[in-house]
Length: 170
Image 1 (cartoon, helix red, strand yellow):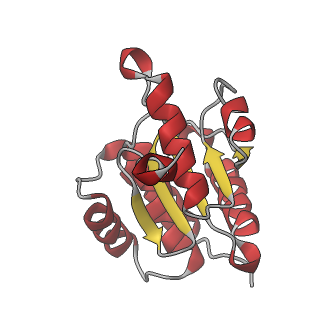
Image 2 (image 1 turned 30 degrees about the vertical axis):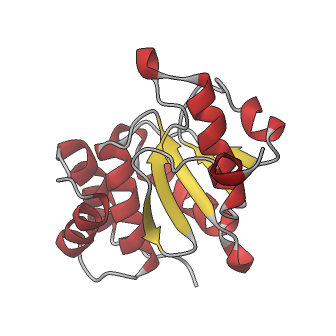
């Protein structure tokens, strides 16, 4: 491939949460009846060409994960359903994010769609890292980054972090 097609296309919903470290997007190629194989390939190419080290899938199923390998992109599956998974699982996910971004590595996180669960997880992560001081501030910043309001499923995740007074271990 040559020209602009060799660079791929930006994944739907792409947004930086922590610049040059952690980004989010919709599942490459879309999901359900709107999923397109060619779009998936073009979005994975963009991820590769923009120097992401790992794609992190929050999905429970392993559907299409082999496509990352086929295109030379590292991936990790870190299943997360939402606040009902509990605070222990939230902390495990946060610790995995931190592990994957160590040494300056860049990750891009997705579920099928960029929804309240992803937004709440990102707001909670910013709070857990100590990058923002309060839950409401973490929610506000995440809403601006994602250009969408954070509904109850996301706010419940942030509340788990606030209620437990969690901070990332040094």
